Amino acid sequence: MQKTVFDAEARAALIQRAMRVQTGMKPNWGQFNAVKMLRHVGAGVEMALGELKVPPKKGPMRNAFVRWLVIDSPMPVPKSVPTAPELISQPTAGVEEEQARLRAALERFAARGQEGDWAEHPAFGRLDGRQWGKLTWKHIDHHLKQFGV
Image (cartoon, rainbow, N blue to C red; front, side, top):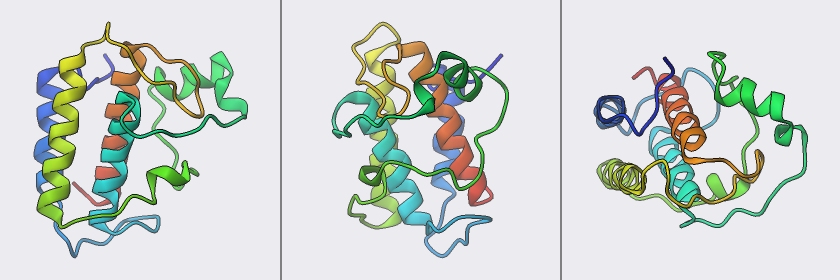
């Protein structure tokens, strides 16, 4: 069964891994430093909650099969996939502050519940809570692996 941030154990495991991120860690791929990565994944959660506005983008990701392939299939997120500029332009604080921000955003996400009201994803379009839960877990897991945690 695919993991979701709505599962308390899966969410706690992501948070524990995020707490192991340290400022000087080097990525296995990509351009992020460790703090910027934490801010990026936190911004993704804030986007899902509608707290960070990201305008819609046109493209193939709105296709139902592509959306299924990325969100519901066991296929991992490819490395170095382009992202919305809004998810990489957010100012950062220190590692502890970004860890706390991510933890708080994940708790707000979980508290909303799968049946809650969710923002539209800029690339995938309208997603339900189940899809957001899976995609958010997959996205955070991908970037934690980027830093070996």
